[in-house]
Length: 533
Image 1: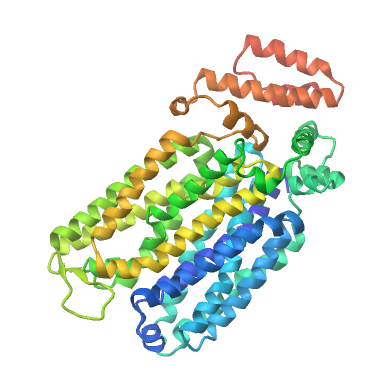
Image 2 (image 1 turned 45 degrees about the vertical axis):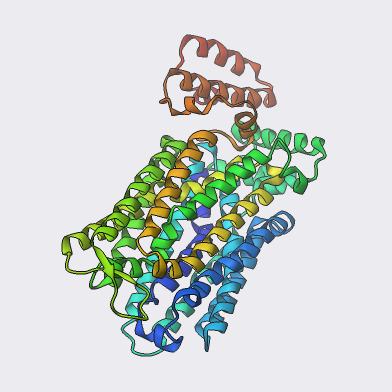
């Protein structure tokens, strides 16, 4: 395989860690509307169902916070393997549960895995990816989550026709399969080169970079050597700082990045996506959709399909435009759903139902709410879905990356827990008003991104210090890729080629580059380097 194919194949296997999170979402969404589940567990409503759903997020908070220690000490890939073991244990306990308490315990243990993998998989992908493909590579994490949601939901839907406890026990047991595949596949994957560098295993760093970047694993390739030197310089400068990594997270230099990472992860929950995943059956029943469980399945297909465009073009579109446009459009869908429920809904005359407010006799309104829920999911999938996992690891320095991403992921899971626990009683108490709350969160997310989140597309991980310490005003990041951007890109390529040329003792390459760049701003310096060598 060539270098880029190596990166793609590795990222796909590692992204199975994200698929486990997707399996968990559907393991709840696929059973809440079935009589087998409600009969066996005593028709859990309100806070009881919220506790069952939120148990996974509670475990994920612990898993995410522990990922920093485990990821730095034992490596990213071994820590992901540890998470896979937790998942198998948790899924086994869930499938064998004899009551709500045992089910919650199994979900907490499985949550330890989700917390570990949600923090470490994006870090691992970020550290093996070339800068021009980093958005796409890390996007595999979100694509795997959406695929896991869809696959598990259809497994749950198919098993729902079994008129026994097997309707939910079989799907919960099947969840162990991707974890087993992930565990054993990681034995054949390389360590992260930047983690190896932090442990002074420099020979392995060079070998892994050659494997990831070249077709023939050539350790003398000038671009491999240039990236090796860039990592070496970054590690050296970090060690010269002699800082305590835990304390440095909140230092003046790093805390801005930490708070932005935490905010992006928090907003990705507060804008209401996982609520539409966990409890979409409740929402559609409130809207008067007859076969809500089947209608929900269409949403999961849309979620997978609409993740693909962002996966392909995220490194061309940029991070900020996706976040800004996505937040605005999602707020519109929330306000529209809430307004329709307010105008055409009425109290549910049937007691002991999760839905206390329903639409009756307005088929056009019901279909409109259904369409809005689909469009909301499509908007999230093409905007916030991959970027919320990509942004935290790509902006954090190597020395604190695991810790920074761990705190950001823990923020995500804390918000997830609050929503998973609180939404069922909220649906029963404030019903349609809940959508106005989420719409307001979308507006707040838009304002925060507009004022505080810089663009990072096509920048190396090592260049993030420059962006956050000496970056241009954020409003300028709206501009298109014009002449100034091409010259900036050219300057970065010249610096890269100059480093490689100096290593190879070929200064004539750099001189050729300089003279050519002044004559033609469209010059391709990397091609010149290959030609001269």
